[in-house]
Amino acid sequence: MQGNKKTILGWALYDWANSAFATTVMAGFFPIFFKQFWSQGVDTTISTARLGLANSIAGITVALLAPLLGAIADKGSAKKKFLFFFAFLGAIMSLSLSMVAQGNWPAAVILYALATIGFSGGNIFYDSLIVSVAPKEKMDMVSSLGYSLGYLGGGILFAFNVWMVLFPSAFGLADASEAIKLSFILVGFWWAIFTIPILVFVKEPSKEKTLSLLATIKAGVSQLRQTFSEVRHLKTIFLFLVACWFYLDGVDTIIRMAIDYGLSIGFKSNDLILALLLVQFIGFPAALLFGYLGTKFNTKAAIFIAIAVYLFISIWGAFMQHKQEFYIIAIMIGLVQGGIQALSRSFYARIIPSDKSAEYFGFYNMLGKFAVIIGPILMGSVGLFVKSLGYSSIIASRVSITSISILFIIGAVLLFFVDEKKGREQALHLSQKP
Image 1 (cartoon, helix red, strand yellow):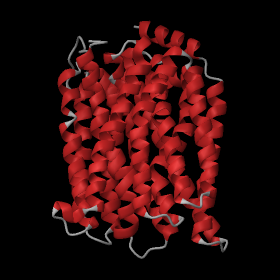
Image 2 (tube, one colour; image 1 turned 30 degrees about the vertical axis):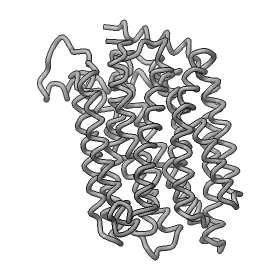
Image 3 (spheres, rainbow, N blue to C red; image 1 turned 180 degrees about the vertical axis):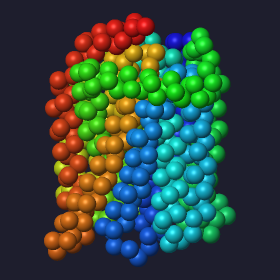
Image 4 (spheres, one colour; image 1 turned 90 degrees about the horizontal axis):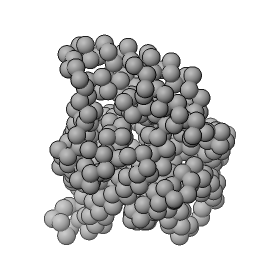
């Protein structure tokens, strides 16, 4: 039921659940462990390129599957079933990372890619369920609540895991490596346990006619063809998707590659982890603030503010010399990261037909994941190219981070031309079509 507090909280708690992976694994310990344990002794530019490859493999897989999965889920009222599958795939793969031996970077890449597929795939159906829990006038606040709880939940578990890594003996662990392995296990259990509320409390609208699995797949494929044709001819939705393709790629790339970048230019891992903790706990109230700004003022204007901050960060990051600067950048990211993601999701939800939400969010996630393919590879390839010209690894890493700025510029220009009022009218027209 839309607007029900228990339903809204149950939905938002999935962000609390899967943000454990986003913080502890994706943004925090995996880049460090990948560089220092699974790729020990390898040049930093090569290990960065390998990490980019892992993110890109996952991105390609989800991007190719997302629209079809969304169409099938809409036809068969199967959003929660798909969410369950992808969430537990991610949780199990996170657990499995703890068993990868030192130097075995290919196994680490495969398990990480599968866990990331679980994370990204689950988000397709989590995002699409927002139309079942929030009326349009509350979407900015409900979407922001999800992201804010994600920052808080992910931050709490990450803080505990950091405590274990810094003081392993206090927990009966041999060293920091053993603590990081245990943190992967805790992420898996956290993700699985806190997925339960959305499965129990969120009710998915049922279809009048129940189809068999094969019939559902066929209907989904047919619906996908129709929707793809619609999206190509709906200027507002298409333009917004392409804008997101660029600016959210910049956001996701910074999330996934920031720790790796800090290590590459010589910062200590402990300082980088503490900076990431700053992002989490600042992000909790900041995401709620952005939700308020979107509701009271203008959603698009709030997104523009966040893009401007990220553009500044991507340029300043190339000139950082001291760890205090990394902390300042972490604070700035914490202020806007949740806001730009939450408002982009709620803005999109308002301009799509609600009865095809999973399918349209499939396109949303498809373009987002194709963009994530570009970002990490862009950083890795630019770094390798600069290194091949004879410059040091540190210089190559600094140049690579500036390449992300172009994504924010293009995304902002395209977003400027998106007309929300026209998009709502188109969505209403599509919902009324037989």
